[in-house]
Image (cartoon, rainbow, N blue to C red; front, side):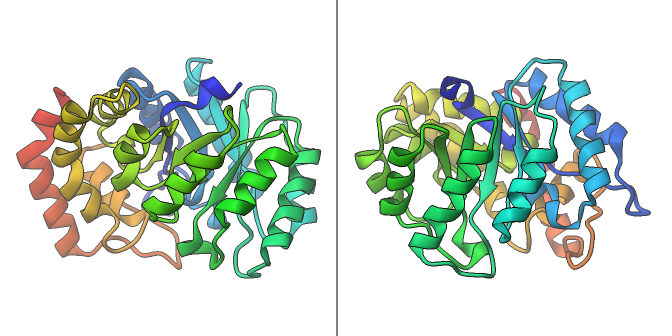
Length: 299
C-alpha cells in the first residue's frame, strides 16, 4: 500500500460558487487537470479543502464527485480527524471506503493533549480504521506538536499507521524522523517550501497545496528530488518559490483559491470565518501568473 503514496499528492480545495454552494463541476475539472498533469494521488477534505466548514452531507457528495472524476486513475486519501476521538472513530465506522486507499488524520486541535494522549488517540484510530492511516502533524494549526519520538513510537506500535504528513516547518524534525523511522514508514512533506529538500533527504514525497495549480512543474520537481537530482530539482523549486510564499501570505486556502481563480479553475470564494485574499495579494498573484505560467506549464 505505502508505495502508492509516494511522489506528489495534492490537498485539493473545495471550490465554491459565489453563493457559497459547492461547485462540483469546478471540482471535477480540477481533479482531471491534476491527474492529466502528473499528480500521484489526491487528498480529500483536508484543511485546504475547508473541512471544518463542510457539512457531512457535502463531504459525502464531494468524496463521490472526486471518486467519479478520478475513475480509478490515482489513489485517494480521505481526511478524517478531529479532537474527539470517539467522534473520529464513529465517522470512520460510518464511511464507505470502497474507493478510498488511505485515511489522513490530523492531530487533535485545541485540546492540546500530551504526547501520551496523542499516542492513545492515534492507536485507537488505527485499531478502528479499515484502511491504512497517515498521521498529520501541523502544530501551526493544532496548537500541539507531535514529537518525532511520538511519531516513531506510533509507527512501531501499529502496522496500520503507515506514514506521517509532517508540516511543522522544521527541517531538523524531518531529519530526525528520517533517521529513526521504520524502513517502510513514509515521511511526507506537508510544507511546500521544504518538499524538495525532504525528498532529497529520503522523504517519500509531498502532500502539496501549490501543486494543484502547477501540477506538471511540481510533480516534475518531486520526481527529480526522489531521484536525488538536486540541481535540476532546485531549478524548478526556485521558479515556484515566490508563488508558494504568496499563496500562504494571508491564509490557506484563500491564497491558492485566488491563484486558481486567476488561472480560470474556480472562484476565489471561501467560507467564513475565512475571507478571500486581499486585492493586493490577488494582483501580486496575477502578476506572477502572467510572467511565469507559460514556463511552469512547459516544465
